[in-house]
Image (cartoon, rainbow, N blue to C red):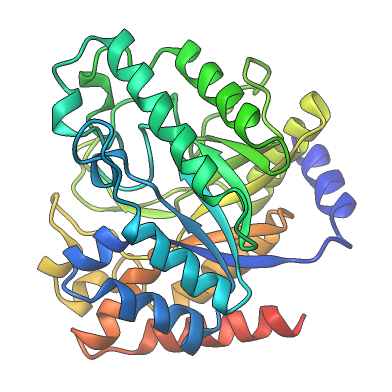
Length: 327
């Protein structure tokens, strides 16, 4: 494993490093900050140019066949204005809890009906944004095979592999020019040899969380070194010939005891992520050898600054992105 990791890091040594962030307006709003002001701060103040956006089904098709793309439109308009790039999440399962963002009107439908309705919606999203100069790639579903988190397991038919295969084919049918990414989960060793075979793979990396699963009720630091993820990316390259990116690098605190981050103090939040650890997350990502990395939690940096009056995370992020742009 270590040998494959070192080979992969060496093989990617001349590839430019791209640092971006995920951005979810609904999450910014849940923290009590204005989503548009948050995106402005990320793009204009920090200088971020690469964004991973979401297209929640329940928000953008509030009634069957009635689409409201206004929220995603202003995000694309802003990122186009700064000559940035977008990787756009598609499908039922997308980043942030409850993971599967199904509209209420679809919940009573049998799987064969809501899957067809979802495909129609996905096609509408792709057709609307495929000609945007900012669009760089799509992510079809998010950590599709990850169980035990979110509400996806309660939705009949949600975890059928055939759904993922058909959605991948659908996106390619409507837009054959842009990269399509499939995400795997955090630390699993699975071999990505089944269908669909995307253009690229994505992976999520979490370092420090609150342990509920083992009931120790303490902060847990995952022991995996950076070279473990270099091995994962290297083995994937050997097995499939495809590249891997970090679509989700933990860069926000993890609240204890199922609380939300706006329920805890800065002192408590710092136990899982402070300014020093945030900088360390970027160093860790660099150490994996993967050259495209999207940090997770930038809405929280802005919340810490504007609501909790602690600019430490924004300050570190500003320096990290400035250094990346110089390189």
